[in-house]
Every structure is written in structure tokens, then in C-alpha cells.
Image (cartoon, rainbow, N blue to C red):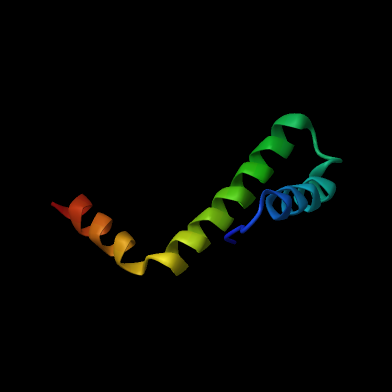
Length: 61
């Protein structure tokens, strides 16, 4: 998800935190990191689909 304001990012983080606050701290960190990276990957793939394919091609050399 691409955020247009810091408030949107904080709101989304708070929602994720509410879902994972019952977990032990290490597990909570891991889950939040995964969710935030997942959101970042989705926004990257939506904004620049060519970027991913060129980096994949570079990795194959």
C-alpha cells in the first residue's frame, strides 16, 4: 500500500499492531515486519513493474 500521509501509515501500523499485540515481542516484530514489507512490495510492483523485471534480468547474468 502506498501512503500519501504519515497519518495513513501510522493508522495502518496501529491496525496491524492491534492484530498482533497478544503475541510475544519477537513474534510481533517478525509479523509486523512481514506485513510492512508485503505492503512495500505491492506498492513497488504497482508503481514500477519494469523495475522488477530488469533487476531479475541483472540477477540472471
